[in-house]
Length: 320
Ligand SMILES: [Zn+2]
Image 1 (tube, rainbow, N blue to C red):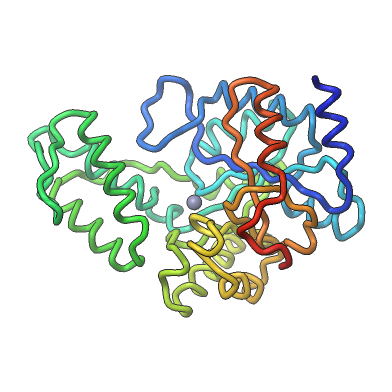
Image 2 (image 1 turned 90 degrees about the vertical axis):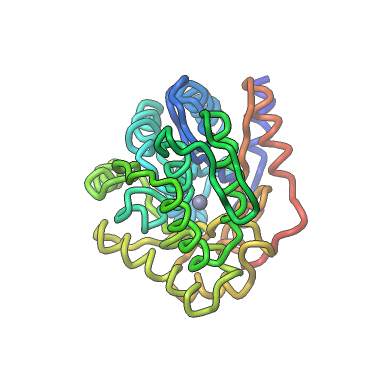
């Protein structure tokens, strides 16, 4: 089985690149508000990935494509958003396996300590016990126990996700006032942690400042979100940031050609979407790369899900 997959992955030619997406990772049993892969499952997957692929950062893959030396089974591991599980769990496991990854940071979290989704979770789940229900614009919602609070959190995240930034902020503020939940400690990467990771060969890319749906914002704000996240990271790391991940990331729904042009104008060389599929030509697709998100239960299923999801897909452009 191993040889079969190695054979297939090595047969690929040209500037082919497989990019895998990860978000949160947490030890088994730790309660997380947002879905997280267990550290055990993540470590197991890293073992599988390195058996079949040559893993490198996106910046390195780009460099090697330019030089004509991108290996046929090249892959990039990406992690979005920038929560501190990147430092506490993901980074040590990558190092254990001798791998690197590209981390995409939503820079507002560096200052605020968390992003809007976690703020919602905190406002609901950590609300005082006396807070038994939320009187929201669409009616009353029970929040007397953990299950009800978790359900309400999910509902509100879905509701606020597709609002323009300003409206999302207003509703979040209203929510915090209604439940009276306090502000928690930090859950985000710290600059010193990022510098340590960068020194160990990890790449940092930008993921906007506030994680807006770019298509919902006017051009000026959208461009600021793209450009400022690059500038903030470059100041923090003291090095050029060449990669970007579109927030939410579905081409046509969350961003379009217009934003691809903005990302280019801001000086990025590579940008990843969340559209599934492989990249047949890294150079040609550089500013709208596809990613795959395998959630396997065994090694052969993992490889099958990767192979299936790396078949060319319709829906996203192929030539940027
Ligand atoms: Zn994100």
